[in-house]
Length: 249
Image (cartoon, rainbow, N blue to C red; front, side, top):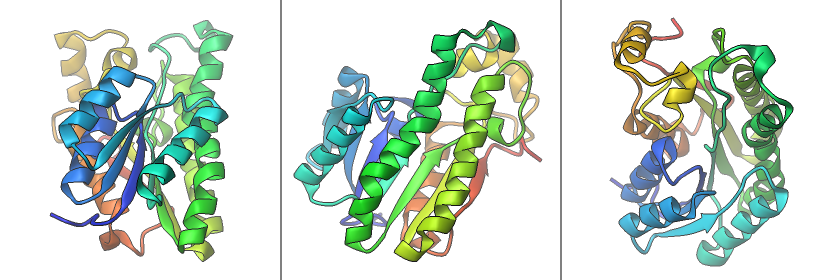
């Protein structure tokens, strides 16, 4: 129960869903956690649940100044950053690719792609000074096996996967490991957008496409992230780990 003892983790999108699951599990495993989210109330609630080993930071990851402030807050509170989890995400509603407007498209790229760039700009120099670190991004099965209806979201997650692999190669000499998770859709606030609507019939149809017969949970994704963040995965970099119940087989 101490696989992340003395480690400091920054997790974006950590007020709910997969991010909150990671924050709780990382803290249980000994990490100090920066719970970063645009949702201040939710971030404060997760932080209060964890206790003294967590701080909440309000951050819009689509803005460089917020990512810089998040990094500064982590260093001020805990003195280092060992693990950076780019978990915040955004999608358009499942539907016709031609009906996604400019503002929605731009926000998808800002949150799902450019935020990874901002985080690297801020965190890589810190990790390099420390002698290493771990970067994890929540990508998606959508970036590996695209399906109609989420074209621009799919493309953004494909970008995240390619960025992960390229960063892994470039940062390996600095002892910075870079991996991403590819979850199948799960019990999060974005589920209705992924399916177009959240109905028992839609859920049953989606579950039928997953060999293990259920949606993902925050605990599933947190367990995978914990392994990638821990020293148990010290020889793992550049991986897009499918956490999908067999969906991509």
